[in-house]
Length: 202
Ligand SMILES: Nc1nc2c(c(=O)[nH]1)N[C@H]1C(S)=C(S)[C@@H](COP(=O)(O)O)O[C@H]1N2
Ligand SMILES: [Mo]
Image 1 (tube, helix red, strand yellow):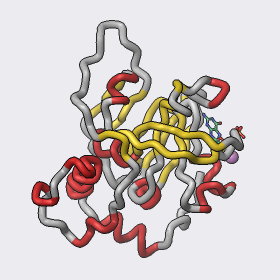
Image 2 (tube, helix red, strand yellow):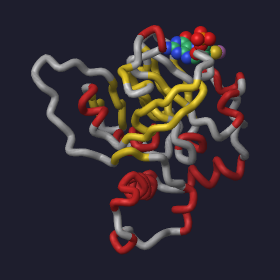
Image 3 (cartoon, helix red, strand yellow):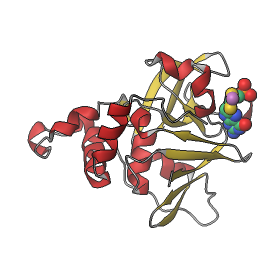
Image 4 (cartoon, helix red, strand yellow):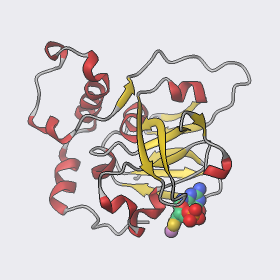
């Protein structure tokens, strides 16, 4: 768990003032990336600068239906109920890819997965702090101020392959290499492995 004062007070306050709906809109525009012509983007509110571009490999794809018997791998627990997602459905959400040195594995690997920012938008709780839970009962909070600005992801591929249990898969939270705080002991709990669920912090 993190101390409540990880991010500068000023940043936290500003993020909380942005309505979830506006954040969801901005996230949608951000994940469309280069595919969207500037004229298609709604008039840019000043807060748009708070949502940087992420290293997307693709935007949202048509959401496939879950097949009979297809396993739920991840659940979004939103204000209007739960959304169970299969791996194929998770892979239809916008995806980022980058190399990072895994804090616990101590290896530099290329991960691909869904940015928490896009997961939160899909769940209807963009801009809220997130609690990510794991199949072993562990959970950790990831602050909105972190996942809105940095492409923290729920990874499903490691060097192009499904992530083995030995490497903390099949779904594991990965933080990008930029901010040095992400590799500090304070953020060790944010690298949630065996991740199965996300919900907004009440
Ligand atoms: N699923 C799961 N993820 C987790 C944890 C856990 O117990 N279960 N512990 C967290 C904490 S507090 C730390 S310090 C690191 C520990 O990883 P390690 O045991 O590989 O060093 O994983 C984080 N992610
Ligand atoms: Mo820890």
